[in-house]
Length: 564
Image (cartoon, rainbow, N blue to C red; front, side, top):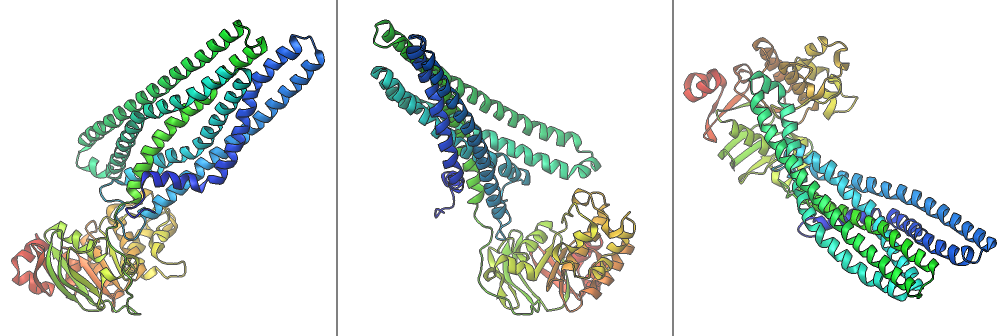
């Protein structure tokens, strides 16, 4: 892989290299098909000269059998070549999707930076398919060039001027075709970018449909998507016009070239330089040339669109990671002692904090951005711009991201559920032997299961939308508790839960997480009342800390943030 990351050319070479055997076999079969097809007008010319002109029935039968053999071979080769080319395209696209999946799921992150989820989906579907199509187009290109070569040889046999006309005329035509494809490549890239953006916007709107309806924002959302969709449509139409102009221009050039061959052949026949059979063969070969040229037109278009898509795929694969991979190891077992010194990132400003092993600590901040940045740093989704976060004396930046996340589980407020049973959702980070009943009870998710038709085996809808907001939060909290990490960081886990249930969750959570480090990033008085200590962040820095009752009594900013 190049030092600066993969490029579009690298993506194309990888796609073609992985399928080189299928492409090679398909190319051989395609060349055999083209050779047989090019020989058909030659054999017809021989039928005229050696059978029709002489009245020989034996010669006629012999050449008809040759024609039958040619058609049998070319049809068999075509079917098998087409099967292999389609297989190569699908396998190449699948390999690219796997590479994209590996990059998107890389623990170091970074692939989603500045990209909507729908845009990544469009890259993994539409762009991967277009690059895969290059693998299927390659055998067609090779077989078309073989067809042009065999037709030139056949025409040389008929007439040296006709053969030279093909040999000297094809390279300029191919060069012109490449030049004509440049605008198509540029507009195809724009088309895919706009389509990906429209897909991303649509995915976001569908995900937030319930919220949009709740606040009466449907007209604004529809207007936003209409503008995005209109831009995507305009880009698609420009690309379609470019493809039509490209194909039309290539076909026009090809038609002129074939007409010239036919006129030269007719002129030679009129002068008696070639026989009637040779003229028929020459005209047939000229008409046959339309097939290879159409194939090359198709291949040129596929390569133009494939190059544009390969560049977009390369951008995702070459995305710089959000965090680096370290090589340090944590003590076994992990005690769960956290130490933050001078942590500055985003809204955080020089945060100093010590969290003892096995303690239950609350974190309150009036700025949601500061809470989010703290979660990103603790979960190693981002590394602090300044300062250090240590777990049991080991800086998180020296750990592999996956090792850090196994030790510190950050449960975000907007965590999604899967379209699976409630039990499988809770067991997402455990195995089938783990007893999740304590986690269900602590999050009161067992009560949610009792209200469902099949209990814990009830299959939830997409992202758990078949549940209410409070029910989703309780199931998501149970999932985090069932994982039982050494350090658990939970962000606003009960904002949609009633106060009575919230108090029960606070008591049960403290009991379940005893001797395990737990951080509650929340402004809920019920949850904060059960903590050992609360840390107040104001202006991105630690402004106060102490027991919840003392802070409520003595700190006005804390009182405003928690009780307002």
